[in-house]
Image 1: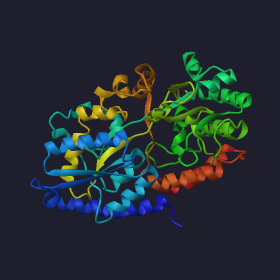
Image 2: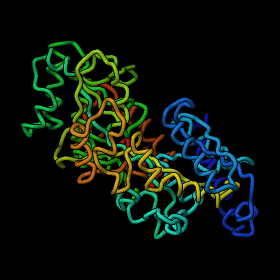
Image 3: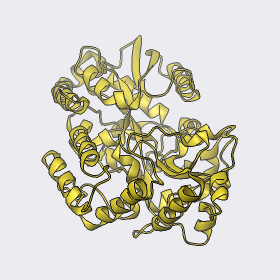
Image 4: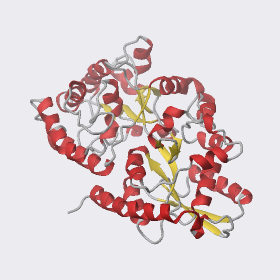
Length: 432
């Protein structure tokens, strides 16, 4: 049976051909004509239709239609993150491709290499008031190829640690904020305290949300140890090297020896109130509204590599196979200009230097405060590390998750290096 990841890989092969055809058509294509009118843009994203986030996008779209009258309608179609990539590749290879979408950084290299995305740099640089140089260069790196830019990050979300003060107080242990102020906020110290929490209260101490389905949920730990499943060029597996062995040994002990962390397949919800701490994206803070317990938020623990801020990212992209490339690029520029970037920053951590401050990120939130967010912003600017990306992202992720499940997320792992060598055997064929 084909996995979803395999279907994605096959779909991108078709997208490559579509992208090449779009590139050959050039200015002669009707969709790129400046006299085009009655344009309907299709935009795919992954938030509910009635969410404040999609309403913000819809409001900006209405403003865009006033200044770009050729566009008479922008429809926002929703899906889920797990379904997104397969949906996009299927539609891009069809006769009704989307014009634009959100796209996770994990898929950036794969879609760029397939020729699926439009270079938006010339449009952004030519747009009056856009201030292209305000885009933080390091945070655009996954979407750049030479002078070309194939997407503009609208959300560069730091992974943080939320903790339940009531659980920590019940165990009689110093909480993460106290440990951080004492310079003791490390993964090894956290693992030790997590065992104490489990032993004294019976509560689960740590939930790395969804790690058994998505290996990136362990990146706060891996980054702090200088560990990664592949090298910088994504050509060689490094999962069996010492940093990864040490990090995964610590995590394995928490899960299977101390039983202080989430078991594979266990259904958990930090916000329900019975879990000591969880690593989640900063945007998850909205779920804390009205919770019946005290809570706190800190950066994730330090490790042998010091303080490293793991950061997921998603960009707004325009597709080469789309029917309206000129209008798509214009709308992308409008969505991500300084004014609209500030509107979206209350929901999504931005990448513009002028907006990377606690006050803008807090926005109208009734949960966060500038004081609470400032340490996260500081660590993001100084030590932010974007998720690793491989060219054949779909197959690599599928092979990596399956190998970790089979060889690492199991009680009996007498030799972690040997187990991770099996992981390398599984993913190396997909690294190029």
